[in-house]
Length: 139
Image 1 (cartoon, rainbow, N blue to C red):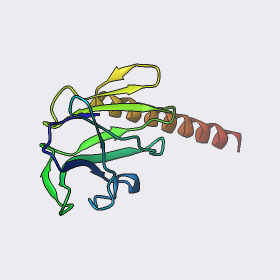
Image 2: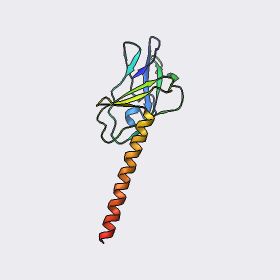
Image 3: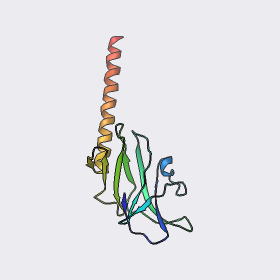
Image 4: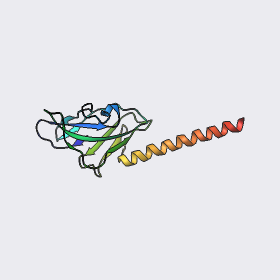
């Protein structure tokens, strides 16, 4: 979800680091759908366990070129191995207030979601290392 008032004839795309997001090619990026209240939304099927970098762009309907890019740095979304469905709430200014909600209704910032993803990755790595040590000890 992205709240953004645009002009008639403009659309919004989400462009990013994965084929689902166009691989940073705006012509391949998915277009969001407009809803009441100037809310833009899209349903995307991304792989679990990945980290996705993305940004929004306002698109001119005739030229299909970007008229404006979302402020600030690129956004990052980490999708954990247990994430079956996520709702992302972003803002055009790319400042505090963005949130990610899982299917249980739990909400957190994208930064907290990334930290949780990294913590899970570190735990998996520790388990693999422990398994390697245990198997070496058996030899």
